[in-house]
Amino acid sequence: MAGSGLQILVAYPFLGPRGAAYGWYPLQGAAPPAYVTLGGWLAGARHLHFAFAWLFAANALAYLGYLVASGEWRRRLFFPTRDARNAWLTVLHDLHLRREAPAPVGLYNGMQRLTYTGVLLVAPLLALSGLALSKPVQLPRLTALLGGYDGARAIHLLVLALLAAFLVVHLVQVALHPRTLLDMASGGRRPDGDAP
Amino acid sequence: MSRRSLLAATARTAGALALGGLVGPACDASRPHAGLLEFMEGFNERLERALFDPARLAPELPESDQTDPAEFPQYKIGLDFPEAPAGWALQVGGLVARPQALSLEALQRLPMAHTRVRHHCVEGWSAVAGWEGVRLSEVARLAGVDPRARYVEFRSFEPRYYSCWDLESALHPQTILAYGMNGDALAAEYGAPLRLYSAVKLGYKMVKFLSTITFLPVRTGGYWEDQGYEWFAGI
Picture 1 (cartoon, rainbow over the protein chains, first blue to last red):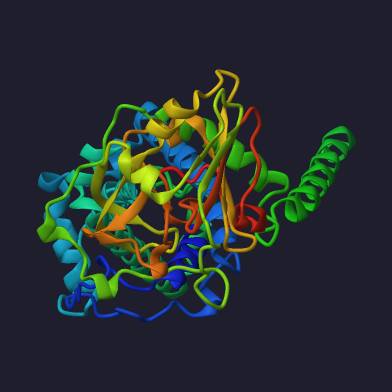
Picture 2: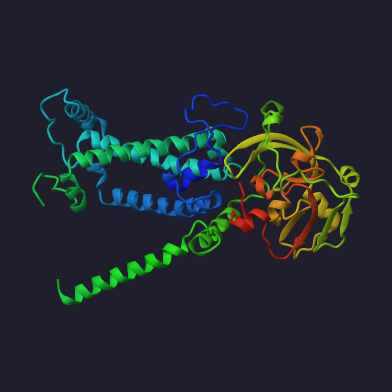
């Protein structure tokens, strides 16, 4: 989705309507390089994008359904009263500003919960802004809610940038703690801390 | 692992590899009108048609929203802007009771429609201009379109340029045959003497330098569509 979307962006690598400067966007006119694009040309990339958008949505719905039905949301989502303090202490510890590690609070630490919940909150924006971009006339209220066609285009790109940043940080973290890869694949230790 | 489960696992792996081998070539972005991508274009078109409301109007915008005319992209597919043939008249035919040949003067005598909506290009840019012309539904009424007509083909005197629309989008009140832009006569850079303009399609569906309109029972393609661009292209 990201690759084909960036190939679509190549056709007009600007935000905002024709004739507007849109000075707040630093990459005005900068086309994404070929190594991050997929599809090769505009029509091909659009076909890929609109075909796999449904897979993206179906995958998200299956995940959300499982999260709710299994009760996993309790130990995976961020609850400020439970997780805020732990999230802050984890950041301090990771930045070596605090020596002692925060007490473990289950499957994820507070910062992980905050990040994963943040992804779940912004990812639907990607789908909604995409719908607005594709059907600005047939979906006028959604498009207006997202700040019009140009607002939706900016949101679509901004959320992609946020998710890309999340992915990079996530991969760096895994590289720093390779053991977590096994936990991810196996489902990790039991909530009570026993090894599986 | 028992032999049976080993065999089952092997069969599953082989199946997955075969499927990958099929889906790989069947999902080729250089050939969007084949395989999975063609199937998904059809799937998306059904959704787009279901979502399309013939009575829903795109918001008409104030003159202050108009894009600086110098920033509104000009259009041609060839090297030069084509010149209208001498004695140009719009031919309207196909499944109609009364085929028409309408000169520019005849078109201008029909009730004038004006629309100023956001224009969306497939490339991702948008711009606003005012367009003056006659509703296509008005010309369809004049010609007496047969109920068997489901599609409309638009041909241009610019060589090779044409497109084809679903009838519902063509008869939308904001689909017009424009002979004016921003209050002036349409310039050659924007499709003079007559071009299609619509609030409900991407720009490449709006045929410039119009010559012929044909009402048809079946769909045809288009200059961009035949290269692989989406056929429906509603917005």
